[in-house]
Amino acid sequence: MRLTQTFYGYVVAMLVCLAGVGVFLLMTPQSRTEHIPKREYTITVANFNRAVPYKVWRPSQDPAGWIANSNRIADGSAGAKVLYLGFATAKREHAMFAQSGEQPAAGFGNRMANSDKSIGTEQINGQPWDKRFREDKKQRTLIRTLPGVTLVVTGTADWPELTQLAASLQELPKPS
Figure 1: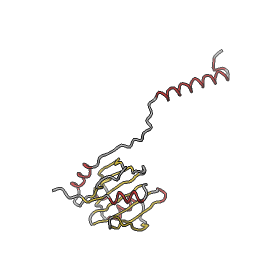
Figure 2: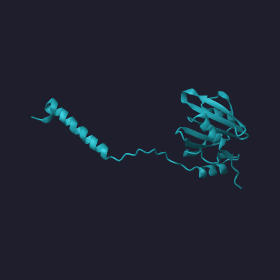
Figure 3: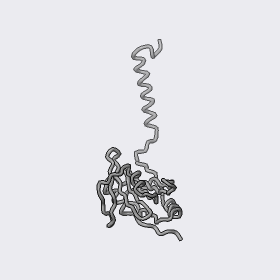
């Protein structure tokens, strides 16, 4: 008589299989530590600064506990270049800084915010930033429009974290 021809035989076969899976799981190395890839953005910002005719901005330093985890230069609307710098915040939310010389500036800001509805302004380092919030995406956005360039700080991070990133931005000199 075969082992699996009775109910008890099936139970024994299942227990043997589960024991094998348990041994496999115990022997497989598992990491319990968080791993967020770090991506240095200094060279990307320098390349962007050489590629565009307007002044470029970047964080003077990453806020404490934040990890820069993405950066890229992309072609935006009407051939305008766009710089994207992504971060995992200290609270492990997402924040991104983007800038572009796209005209009209409102189009870039609206696309980055996924909204054209302002909910007010925020004074950061004495400068007004337009605030946007998109409830369904839990996306908060700060937008500052300057002559020739639009700066956007956006993400799922809370307002104090986004404000911290916006406050860290500094204008870079153009390379000679």
